[in-house]
Length: 269
Image 1: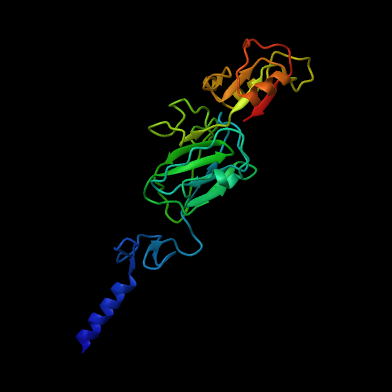
Image 2: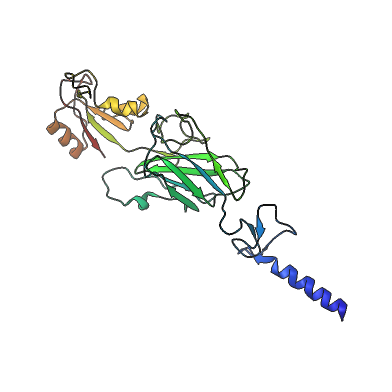
C-alpha cells in the first residue's frame, strides 16, 4: 500500500510538471528552474519569470543619421520565422497598425525622448527587432540577452549604428541582415522641387536647399535621383504646377537637375 501510494505521488508530480506543446508532444519544467526563473510562471508547467518581473530590452531609437531621438516609433519583435510584409508604395491612407506585420510577440512605442522598454522578449537566443515609423522601417538582429527576468539596456553613443531608421534601401551596409530585401528596409518616397531655403539666422536666402534637410537627418546620397531613377527621393526642377502635374500623371518631365532660385517644395508619396 505504501509503495502504491509513493508511485501515485510520483506520477502526480510528473503530471503537474507536464503540459502539451500543441504539436502532440509535451513540455516540462526541469527538476529545478534556473534562477531567477520559477516553474509555473507565467504558464503552468513552464519555467518563467516570477510575477511582476519580465525579461526586457530598452534603448533609444534615432533618425537615420543616428543623432536625433525619435518619438512614437513602433518597436517590436516579430514571431520567429515570420517574413515582414512589403510596405505598399503609392498614395494610400492606412492606419499605423495596418503597416505592422510579422505577428509581433512584443511591442512598444518610443516616448518623447525616443526611449522604449520592450517586455517579454526571448531569452537565450538572438532575435529580430523592427523599428517602424510610418513607411520608415528597419529590421536588425539583437544578440541573445544575458539577464533573464531583468532589463537588458542597449547602450549606444550618437551617432548610433543599431537603433536607428534606415539611411538607404539600396545599401548593403544599412540592412542589419545578410541579404537585403524590401522586407527588411523601407523608406517613404519623396518628390522635391529643388530650390533654396531661408536659414534660421534671418540672413538672406542662401545656397542651402530643401533637399539638404534629408541629407542632414541621414538619408544616403544614393537615394537622391532624377524622377525616373530608383532612389527614394526624386528631384524635380520645375515650378509647383509642373511638379504637381508630373506627380499626378506619373510622368517624368524633361528638365535639368541644376536648381533655380525657387522655394523648395516636397511631396511624400
